[in-house]
Amino acid sequence: MSADGISRRAFAGGLAALALARGAGAQGYAGLGEKADGFAQVVPGKVFSFPADHGPHPEFRIEWWYLTANLVDSNGAPCGLQWTLFRQAAQPGPQGEGWANQQIWMAHAAVTRADTHRFSELFSRGGIGQAGVAATPFAAWIDDWEMKGTDRTDDRSLAPVTLKASGTDFSYALALEADHPVVLQGDGGFSRKSERGQASYYYSQPFFRARGSIAIDDKPVDVSGQAWMDREWSSQPLDADQTGWDWLSLHLSSGDKLMLYRLRQKDGRDYPFGNWIRADGSTRMIAGSDIQMSPKATVEVAGRKLPVEWQIAIPSRSFSIACKPLNPRAWMGTGFSYWEGPISFAGTHDGVGYLELTGY
Image 1 (cartoon, rainbow, N blue to C red):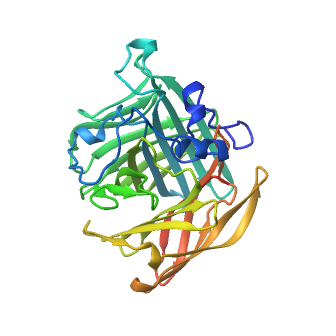
Image 2: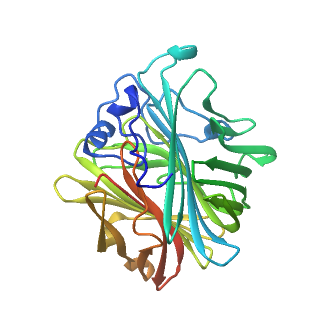
């Protein structure tokens, strides 16, 4: 469905209080900074275990499985897609049965070309089998949207998997492979989000190779390219004075990967962080003091001015790039709205990636 055709991210009942995962208005982001009494807390030193940590963590309030893909179609035209499944617990405590289950699920799917951006959104209550995630064999689903493993899926890399979703005027299906294990973000998977200690558990699979098809207005085309999956869970990922974030996942033509974000605060200051992921899968954290992220151009979408072009520099790595969106109007007009779309970049390094803008 087109970006003009639906309104976005209103997470019925329990989700309205907490602007789930990547996108929201001010009320939603206030929810992300609310205290999380009764829920499990994110603390340093967690030892990740796979496949278990590919599955759900219902003792935490918020969780997501978030994939973006930078693709080229058979005509050589760039395009992108997003597939995201969110889980939120409406209240802490033992899991209820059936309709009494307190887990609420939401999913977003989108495809983006230079000339169009289409998206769709689904919701489900937990406990009835309509949505969920299983660690072994891996499967994440809501209705007929799914990310699904096979008997060949490796627990360390979460690959291979297949991916599919559809809206009223688009659909896609991908096969994803990867040769490297998943990458722990932050300090061994402990990803600090503020100076006051808010954090998430966070890992990524930035090495997916993608092949499949996208159909827009019932016109299918073969696609191939690169994909990046983020996994996070937390109970209070933001502080009360944080309003949103600017987030980038970058595929460098050298084979290296780069994750960057800055969390914006009400006082005008930012909390930036980065992780340089080498082509061999090894990582190096980048201090916030060494990250320069400067918006260079805005576009007005849905009554908001959004910084869709950026100049980014990391002086310690002699890194300086300019980023431009494939489609400046890649607005996710769901309940708690956000901007999410493919970008390209050039400068000391070049490549493609995804940009996410929330809280504007």
